[in-house]
Length: 237
Image (cartoon, rainbow, N blue to C red; front, side):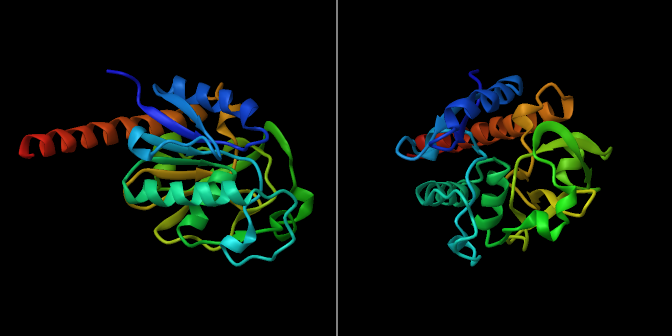
């Protein structure tokens, strides 16, 4: 059987250099990635899972934030990814949100963002690096704890915003040592986890690979269920 196909949304500006890292994580997890971006998107019916990648800040008009505070915005990407996130969750397609993608998952479900997260949680704690310099603590009895365990995790940090008010049906699954939200997840199916860090730059760590493997495993289960449903409809046809 072929590997599950995972759509990966990326920035129009920097996606060309980010996608190979995400695709490697997906491949190591047993799947295969396909880069999607504004102007180059297929229907979700063609894929088994979705990764919403990192990049530009999300426009504050999507969640009632302050206009003008964000430095880099891409309204077309905002509209695309919000639509994809909503549709994927409605169709039970597994979703992994990375950095901006975690924030978009929250916004798509009605949540809001803290546009000045480092000021809120103390600027002296700010770390901006792709290296695993930030310590996060996993909440017990969450999907993330089943994937990576409860031991403190060291991750990278490249963001300026963070989850504020949680979207409907979500819960916090990790915080850093300063209390900032670092991971969220949907309480019920389908599989939907958002992490504030970038696991694609940490695939040498087994718990980061486990995130991609969990996504691919869920995508495989989704594909089997979808194909069975389609086959049954054809027989009843």
